Amino acid sequence: MNKIALSILLLSLATGFAAGQPDVPECKDHPLFPTRMPEYRIEVCKVEDYGIYEFSSTKGPKTPVEGKFTFLTYSFTGQRISEPSGLAVVRNYENAIRKVGGTILQSDPQRWVNGKIIKDGQEVWVQIEKGNGKIWLRIVEKKAMEQFIEADAAAFSNDIRTTGHVAVYGINFDTGKSTIKPESTQAIGEIAKLLKADSGLKIYVVGHTDNTGSVDGNIKLSQDRAEAVLQALVRDHSIAPARLRSFGCGLFAPVASNDTEEGRAKNRRVELVKQ
Image (tube, rainbow, N blue to C red; front, side):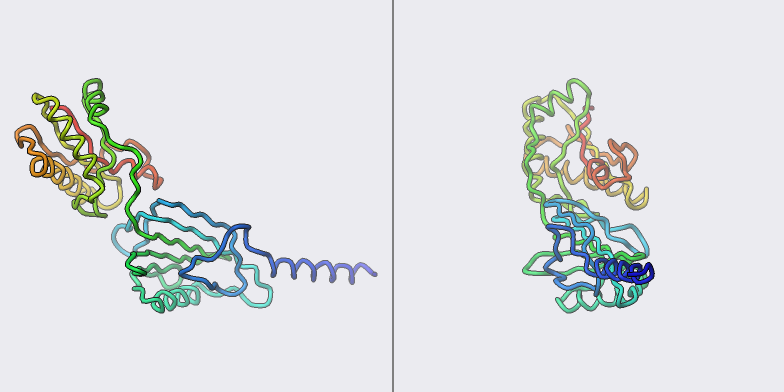
């Protein structure tokens, strides 16, 4: 076999391999989108039982959504067809979202689209993004976090005694609102225990946010959330209003980097500060 024939054979074998590359082991399409664009393989997959993703927006702040998070990266390996345009990918997924009864929320038709689907009573958010040779699919099946770490009045008391303040995690709110979620009952109850065990203790209830959104909006949101906790203590636990004062610190006292989703989650908190 001469060198030219050998080169053609090797190229043919390489092309056939590239076109038929399998998905990364243990990765599979999400049930919402059981099919994919032609000649793409799954290159990366990640599933978090509880995670967060901030969905893109053409104007205004991104929308953070928490729940079961699935991330898939599709890589184009086709040799028989040209890579589809961003518009073709976006329109395909728009149609797929609508086909299962979903709503298109926002899109940049050449690059990405996101939507919301209500399936079996569950709210599911999806975002598809097209890049050079890649399609990124992010899905959040919205749900409340399962609380494993319990707030404890004794620990609160120790921190306030030694440092003058304590961060209370486990008080959660609806996204962008001051409505307290039901799973926050235990943490607020422990604050009440702290106050009832020390009748002379007065505290500031201080709200904190991450840096998503405007400065003024975050200050108002943190103030409203702190006030909501204060009112819950007065209404549900008979704590005297004179012992409490709410304050909104907004994004001005982070405890972690706002450059990561994990850091932003830590920054969204309520603190108790001794008066």
